[in-house]
Length: 351
Ligand SMILES: [Zn+2]
Image 1 (tube, rainbow, N blue to C red):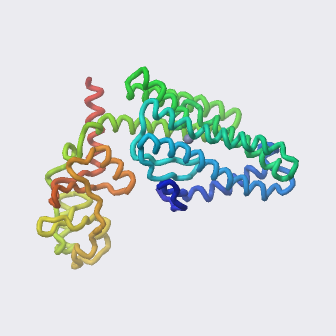
Image 2: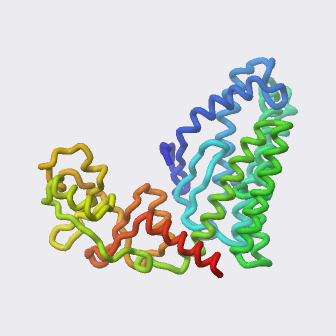
Image 3: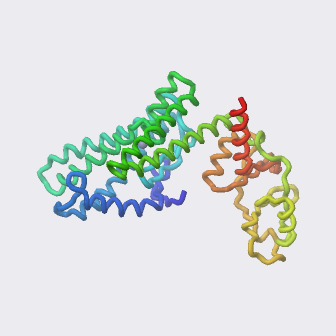
């Protein structure tokens, strides 16, 4: 994701997505034009308060995510980063907690938002202005965030709470499908309702629907890849190229083999990766060595297949070499994973 790192806290990188800068402006505008107590229209210091409220809102979204993260860490799940972006934030966990732990992790975020709301609720009775005005608006917004997140629909916290709760009674994949189906159904209802009542609801519903579908896909993938390792899904017949090869020679091979990228091997050792994109527009006489990328992301034959998939998603690299004792033994591409899913889909329907 396109984001910049802000700071590091409790060993977690806090990043902001570029969309946030745009969202911040939109939020300032909404706060500025909304009628009090959902905005500062016509109040003293209206614009200043709108700006402070927008920035504060992201601080409270950050605290909400930090709540999720710290409970995850307590259960022994590593949290790498928190990304703040459109409609709040996400905490990136290396593995998702399951069952009651998922329930505990999920409920913490809304609990933090409610706590912030409670503090500003009391401050809204203050005698000093504009603190009272600010608090009156800010406590409502945080309460809305907490309530909205408790809607039992994926990908909201409430959807996870529901899945955590259900998984006590039904198998995990069944719990996931009930929670995602509920999420989609609610999103459709919300979208239609929003068309007549408030378009914001329709827009949010679209995001909920997409999130629920994404979650469904991930859980299906987890079912498929869960028991497999890199060696089970890798392609062992690999077309490699030498670093001394020229672009011209490389193009000939690429036309015949029709892959987009190739491992570069020298004396039996992997030294780089080269793709069609790297050589596009370069003179035919240039050596591959000059153009290949040397920063390699590799996995071992024992690496869980799900980990390989996650690595591809995070790095955006579509082709990961499998290395065993410095020797290149296979390669896994995004296309391989997509085909695996198609195969599984056919087998599932055939049953
Ligand atoms: Zn949350």
